[in-house]
Image (tube, rainbow, N blue to C red; front, side, top):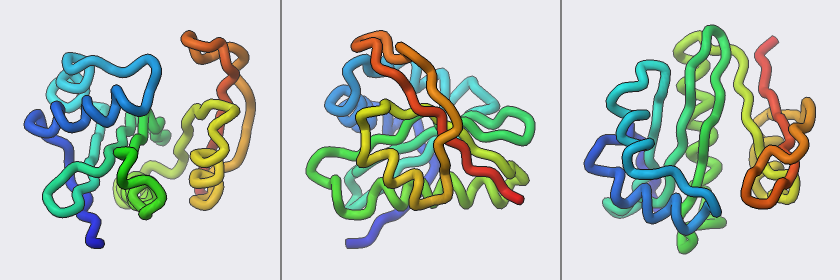
Length: 148
């Protein structure tokens, strides 16, 4: 299986929305994604393609010397096939090439699969945001990856 990472375009939004709605209990809207990729000059979004189908996507906000991962999601039928790994590596590579030494994110405390994936790429737990997720009031774990 060949995974191709590329920048997200407006034409990708419909497929990305399908993944978003199937993954998150409070999904982003079409308008939110469009604003992110068209208007937000601090945002960078990528998609992972397999056989011309979008298998996953990820986003990042660039704030000074920090990158904030906004979301990463993989289509259910592509999970466990290295798509999430490729997306995280793509975001980390982007940050390294663009002088962004520190990357952060929030992840549901119960999402052990995602937490393990991020740990594999050098992210460490750095704190907790109590009740962060409005749908369930679940805590978020704050994770950081810092360059020395």
